[in-house]
Image (cartoon, rainbow, N blue to C red; front, side, top):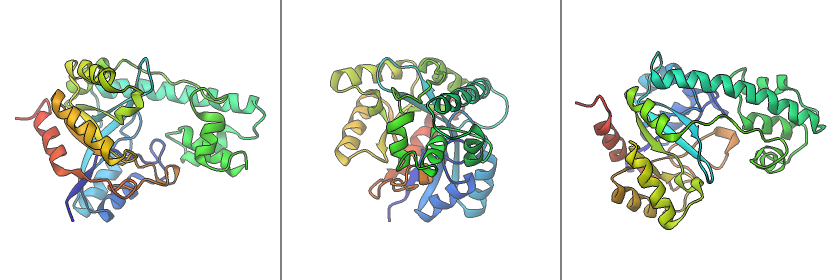
Length: 284
């Protein structure tokens, strides 16, 4: 079996259903030599994940995922090698978490106004008291019989443009890229096809981001087809970006994705992490 890695996973510290330690256990079970915990806007699960990784002999890559402003589609940046404690990006994450909490409260009020019999207390309990995200709202809606699945809940109420959707605070990508660099990290564009750009438009946008310091491109994404992965890897090479990848594991909230293997055919080479290591701002 080829040694693989997974540089995109989520735990109960944001919108995943499994604990940080459990995410690491899944990575080991899938044969990963390294796994990144990349919860949204926070580093809260790193201590637990790091302890489990040391016990099981797998490398933990500390990180997070941040939503950024974009004129088309959605844009998320994966920020790697970001440790707990004080720092430029860490301070921005604290502000984003405060904004996220306010957004969640507004979302709960909006769903209630739509006549849906759920409470914010139920959503908090679903999330374990912290890291509330839309999948937790979706799970409560399913439990009340108001949707047939998490995906159905998003399509009916929670996706962008649906009646329960509340936009979250987003910062500009160049700002996050710079804060990440100043905090000793590398920024990678997650699931680049979510920008909803094709051909020259996609190349132009990626070149702009590369010029501001973007380090890599998540080419080997859990839900991408093999030809999409190859096309993106070729584009990354042409633009001087590291071709990285990950499953985007969320546990039961995205049941088709498993750590390390995605839908079963994902193989992110160890060389991707080695290249990121070489490009770290503090690399010798």
